Figure 1 (spheres, rainbow, N blue to C red):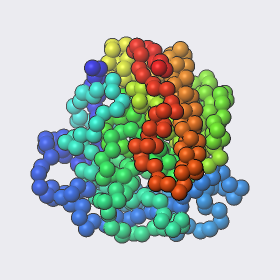
Figure 2 (figure 1 turned 90 degrees about the vertical axis):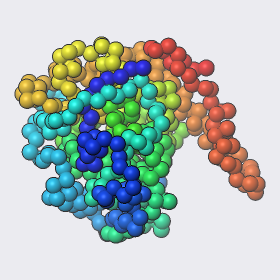
Figure 3 (figure 1 turned 135 degrees about the vertical axis):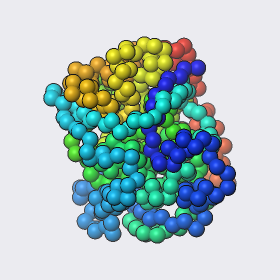
Figure 4 (figure 1 turned 135 degrees about the horizontal axis):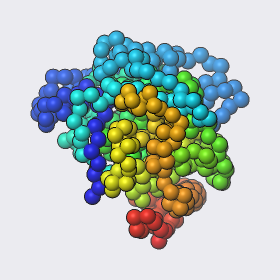
Length: 449
């Protein structure tokens, strides 16, 4: 069992309270959280987005065309609500006061001095050799955040039109997805997207959750608004399914990196490999429909999860491009293979750092920040070329299998249209029968059986 010690990021003020007070209290907590003790009769704003089925239109952003929306999503709702929470003092520090600079060099890495993220916190042990772990309700999870930390519910519109309701009932049975603040923000507008919050899903991507994240990127409609995901073992510290998102008004270095096309999926998704970047990764873009892009990326993520490979995801370009980055930094750290020089920086290379936004905790590191130093850290994060190609083989096999399975399911459903619909178990059986089993081999080698 591999473990590392790190200072956990506090994303909710109630996470801090729980850590200080010990085990959660029974009965009504009296703090207006999202748990059963407080949620009955609660109301929160609801943003109902219009589902879109194209990745691009001649008129610009997906589904927006020229029709005026009832709420301008990013600027008017998300940032307006975020500013309201800032004025109410819900954040642990003022992120706008953090020093930030673009590091000179070809890639334009962004350095931020953020001393407030780890002050007065003790290191905690985290297991880093198991990407899939069961949800544990006794630990902090997002049902324990305060209702005042939730900005709005984020759901697909039932009638196909964008809607905003300032006071919508919270239905535990329907398990809404919500957008909440991160009380330890990295940047302006830093929020958490928590899919189907009351289902208490562990931190693992599925088709539905990734599609939801892509819809959020589309609705934001701003290229400087990105979403990120960290798996367990890749610096996620809360095992409750969530994405992060924030606004950064400069390009991420990873977005400027050249790529080389590898293939195009049956659904029209172009898959490329990052070139001349310190972390090896794949880039997914395009597709005949948003669902095609979502399914292809989801299949790749599920493959990594099932093969116990930690990874990070960056969603950029208003949902048009997705970066998938398998990594091994935490494993190397647990095995004692990371230099003390890098460990002393206390930088945890999660999705934002890997994408080129370096969040530094020491003044010394900020003053000495350089492209060379950023590259040195990220190079340790990356898989070796040999290992990366092994992982790619798994991913492409999984994508091909999923595509074949989907065609098989569609054909069988068409043939049996008048019969009883297939159960989830039957669909899963088709998926499994269409694919070779993927199993872990030795530590450095994954094989197909």
